[in-house]
Image 1 (cartoon, one colour):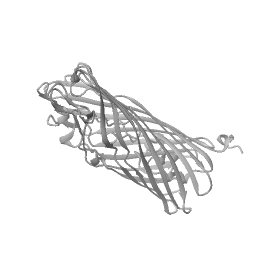
Image 2 (cartoon, one colour):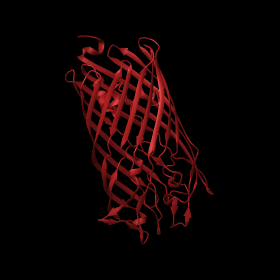
Image 3 (cartoon, rainbow, N blue to C red):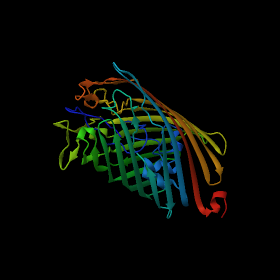
Image 4 (cartoon, rainbow, N blue to C red):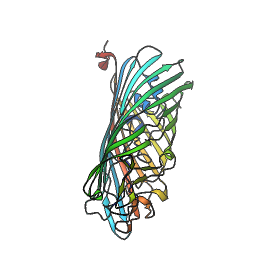
Length: 421
């Protein structure tokens, strides 16, 4: 969630309520990319190419690759961010990053040789940041906590042995809670969208996947309270907030029987995320004796690129690695204290081990280095007219991500886990 204040003529500005998972964001803006332990190991190179069930997050046509019966995949991520913020003229504000546990799950059933159905549960967006109570900027940037749940029932149809199409729904719950010294906001909503994708094998050993996640529209409704409102509690809403569309293109190429390379290019339509008024009773909320409260974000489109490879070291063990680079949608002029985001370099390694005939264990590690970041005092979200101050500074951030996943195919019921019939 990108929570950022605008200028307030009285006590405080307002915070945006746009992040969707109780976690620090680890893709551009307030997105979360940690949706697959398998692809974490390649920095998500090949993520839409369908090599494992969790590929359906980026491309629902990955369902076309599942075997007979039931297939299940569970993903468990532990994210350890560090974001040290230094405010000009004030000093070190400490680490505002918040450690997070981010799970995901996928299930699929093959109805016949052409049709497969699936279901996934994820948190595709999110942010949590927290300035300490004694911070000099607590009146501008306080604590942000958000939870979201996105479920996606999906169906895939194989037009041929080499070409699959798929379509799915998105049902997304978002709950947002915010506090600082002067204002508290809380709101939630359920929004709807869809996913679509194609998976194509033009040549033996070559797989191309193209996936689309639509925007999900939200009208957040809840309450605002605190000293900025004279201790009152009032209903609030933020209307017509739409999450960005995401288009992912991936290619996987077999080089030898034991070695494969992959690549991904991803575009995210962050430029649809602009500035949003905070409403109360149908009109814009006013605090401090006359200041209209609004949420300034003004992002640009985001891009992500990754290359990776994997090697079958033994019949049961596969090793993989990858590198990615992300162009942040947060611009130098619109960067707030609450989300001091910048371009990121991803370095990843991982493995898969076939524990049983139908059970595979995935594990991975990623180190993210965030470009050293300037935070401009000219950005509205970093200003407090009540205090007569504008806060600028720098941020130094990196992230460690640890992940483990389990994939099980139940072709013959529970006995299938052990190769039975």
